[in-house]
Image 1 (cartoon, helix red, strand yellow):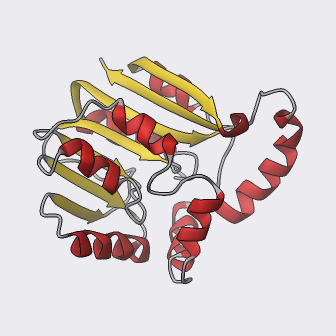
Image 2: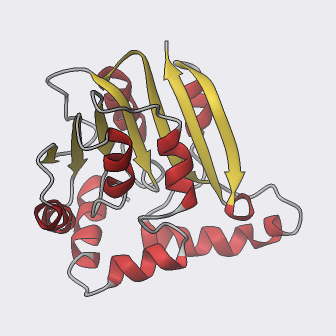
Length: 213
């Protein structure tokens, strides 16, 4: 899928009541997801940190990020879907968060005005069509020594679960625009020092944290 198609698809999803809540619950990707928590904990944030949430969606990372920021720092969420970002903005307003900036932009072409201590992209890097450009945006946004975190999709290599790969592939492309053949780990590893990697959810998801050289 190309960028305009993915953006329209996510705008459409965001117009369906409770769509994202059901999707998150089904995929163990809720705001309290242990996968999100595991990656965010390893970003080593504190009350002075600036963190970038690329392809932030409806803001499902925000509660966990705010807990790590201890009410301080700065959180910048970037997403290309206006309707999805509107749901994130509603959450920010309801929580009364003053340290959050939301930006409607293409992850592949957006550039940060100041360096971040950390950046993350959860359940999205295999969906963004220009994924290598989006990763380059993250690398350039994070200061040397800063951390990058990912929750991503993959084909399972786990015994038994790998038999479901054809079904996983058949569902992922038409219903989410997911490309399961991207070597995100390899791309990140060429530019960063990997500090944590784990395959979860039957091997269909991976958690990756790396430090920018």
